[in-house]
Structures are given as C-alpha cells and as structure tokens.
Image (cartoon, rainbow, N blue to C red; front, side):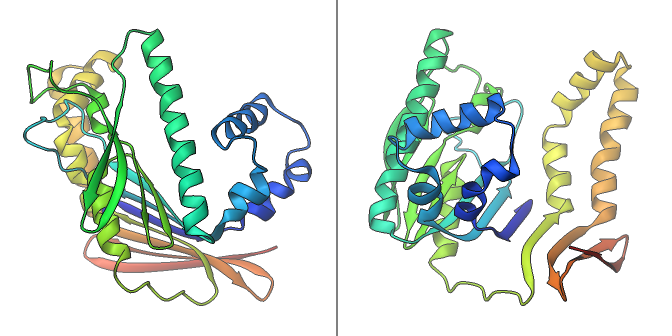
Length: 277
C-alpha cells in the first residue's frame, strides 16, 4: 500500500445542499448531473444514489503487480480503489454495476471514435466472489516489457458482503476482497478522517519509473542526462528520509482538530493544530 484514506462524510446530505454550497451552476456541475442521470437511469442522485451508501468511505492507493503473460507497461502507475458500505447491497449492488457498465460503454465509444483499442468486459472470480473486470487485449503487443500506459488499467467492480469496491485494477480488488472478509476495524474516537502515506512505497514506485522520468525531464526541461538522473534520484531519497506519515482530522469542543504523525529521519515526530469552526 502506498496510501490509504478513511473518512466519514454524509454524501446524501452534502449533495442535498448543493444549491447552497454551489449557488452558481457551473458547466462542471451540470455535466456531472447529466452523466449521473445517464449512468443511474434518471434516479434521484441524492436519495437513490448517494443515500444508498453510508458515510464511511475508504480510498486505497497501492503498487501494482503485473501478469508476466501480459507484460509490464513502460510507465507503471499505482492502482487505486474506492470502497463504500451499502445500505441495501442486494439492490444497490446491481444498480452500481449497471452504471459502471454504462460508463465503460461511453469510454469504449469515445475511444472507438479515435480508432483506439477498447475495453473488454469479463467476469472474474476470487475465492467465492464473482466480479466484473474490463481489460485491454494484449494479443497484438510485441514488446511485453514496454506496453502502453493503458495496460495499467483493468477497471473492476466487486461486492464483498455489504461493501462495494470500484478499482482501477483487478489485483487490488482481490486484495481488498481478502481484507474485507476479515473483522472490520473499530472506529477511532473523535476522528472523521484519516490518511496514511507510506513514503518508502512511493519511493520504490518512482524508482520503477526512473528511466521514463529521466527521459521526460530531459525533454521538458532540456537538461543533460546526468542532470536529469540527479534530479530524479533526489525524489526517492527525500521520500525515504521523510518516512511514513499519518494525518487524522476530527472535532473537539466545537473546533476542527488535526493531528499529524510522521517519521523524520530516524525519529518520529508529532504535530497537532486546531481551529474554530
């Protein structure tokens, strides 16, 4: 895992007050509402979509492992996933899968207009869980060690008990299914948001993309190879020096409180701050 975010946000209540929060109807908001209306077949976004999940939300970012039979992209991107707990899994799970398939259909249509390869939707199985996964065909790929960036993505949707998982890759879905089958973690008192970053994992990801980053640095900044290599090498060095970090947010006595714990060099440090609401 590179980073993880857990937060408590009532999306239904938030979206129900969108007119007060966003008094000007921007083109982005109108586009979002139109797309949500298409994906969810005209259902009420606040009540039938955002109200179908409880406020506990998790985001996971992790290093990817690649199937040797397919190959490795020239630029390796991390996998990321969004996890919700559904109020009515049997009903909303099917609604969410239909919306997911419509979204991929729109992606395939747009890519087809540009003569680009599309995604193939298939059913996968992990343990006793069957889920949907979409992937790009690698049949015509010759260089397995230098695949296009699109091969970082195998978008997937899965249901594990009450949980709904949207992920950019099936390998992360498999890990999350295993994790969610275990006992749930207990809530942290007075905490409504938590993010953790493992800088050592971030450093290894940079090192895996070292060559492509060096080339990009040379092209965009006009540096020599030696200068570019020195600049890129500094990134994982700084990340490892900073160590891992955890940020917690919550409220106490009517104030917003944030606590940050991190490892700086060989010592762990902590900082805390608060502000009036």
